[in-house]
Amino acid sequence: MIHEVDEALRRVLRAGALPDGAGDVAFEAPSRDWAARRNTPTLNAYLYDIRENVARRERGAIAERDASGMVVRRRQPPRWFRLSYLVTAWTSRPEDEHRLLSAALGCLLGQETLPPEALTDALRNLEATIPITVAVPPAESRSIADIWSALGGELKPSLDVVITVPFPVTPSYEVAPPVTQGAAVVVRSVDGSPDDSRLRMLRSAPDGAPSGTGSREGER
Image 1 (cartoon, rainbow, N blue to C red):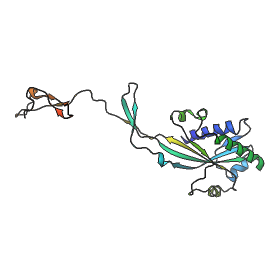
Image 2: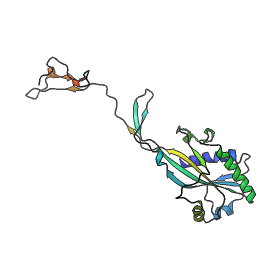
Image 3: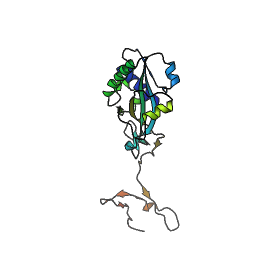
Image 4: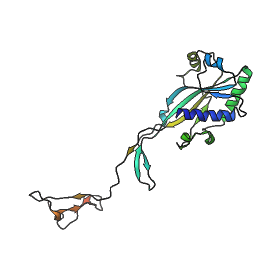
């Protein structure tokens, strides 16, 4: 599912920040080696953190129904994860980088969720809105400077883009077929043989308690 979100983010950035196609969107780590190989204006969206959004975790099971409305399977609800991207602009001049980063910020600010036209088939099949935030201050446990130090590069202006996406939980479980016959009680004689005259079908009494039917009801 992560690669599906990558593709959706690529489509949003291409349509909003690179509409004329004069540039590229990359997802590689923006290290010194990568920067040395780059030869075109590029928006880099580096996925640096994946964390579950525990506030959206649900309990219980979700019923799956067939065409007639009968429950045939049950599955666990999806778990939501926050995918954090470090978006940076790379050109030969700082002014051009700022212009490209500004275009990326402008197109992302207008999106509270991933737009339908940017979704892949897999994301569309989730039938869920996928929130996206941009340039929101990160948690205190995360530091952008530490990320650049780990990459071995110099600190650059960047956008912190977070996309929260549901991940389906597998497997699902088949349910037992529906009950189509009533319950029955068979009373045996003293010698152990069934006494057909004492076969009673249980039904719900008006007060909710089970009651028997038959000519010898109440006998033991």
